[in-house]
Length: 361
View 1: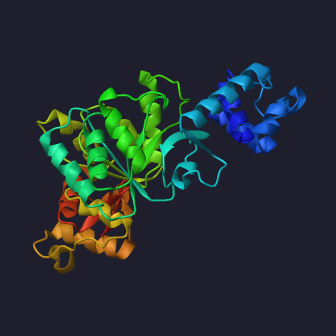
View 2: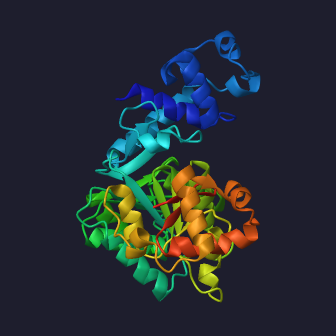
View 3: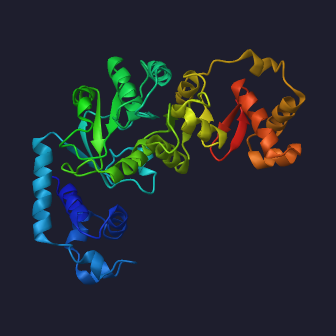
């Protein structure tokens, strides 16, 4: 029995102790077992650790519950990986708010690069077709397709990946003793055979509303690239994009008609430079080592306006530039500069980078 994991479970059961506190305590004492056996005086010597925080540490009843939970996981083929384990996914480990433990089912290869594909539950045929084409581009590539196993775009991405034998990971907003939505129970079982399902929540945790936003940071944290296919204003997938940007990951959004409610969120992200415009699946695949398809305009720079040519020459000389720096160099207000930059991006000449930077492709 893995005593370190049992003691980590016990720490998470303690009232007033969250993952950030656990990280601080383990950083000080070296292991969860050492934290559990430390004296009150030793615990109180840690910066910002008070009596309220430590009052349940060492409680035998909680430790007994932790042993029981660990036994449940073994019986139900639930595996656990923790933050200090070499197997813990490296990209997620880079995130300051990474969970201290992940419960999972399946044979997950945590070392594979990953792309997250997220979007609305009310997917249109436009979003469905693009999602399938995007997933198809990763066939025979060593990559994990990550999403939230929700209805709509998430489920479409998982199903297509499963059909093509692409490993796919579903991040749940509840414990692994149940499956929400129940319509995806069969899909989840198939995913476990090639990829898996995972959660930071203890096995018997119910799918409460607040958990869904919390789990979205894991979807973003696992992936070097996040793609949002369709979303309305304030859709849940928007939070995944916010997390991805905070982790300085690549973000793409599929544009849609301004009259389509399912595209309003994506269009807003593109307008606010929070996501790069995505017009073809190959642009995402190229970030994983595939050479992008070159556009003749990129090499010949024909049919370009004087302003477009000035921007190209500036980026050739300076490298990547932030939009405010471009505006200053060109003596052009940002509201006039934005549509020109968008046209250059549509022509596959420049790309948008995190932080509102631009560079030549």
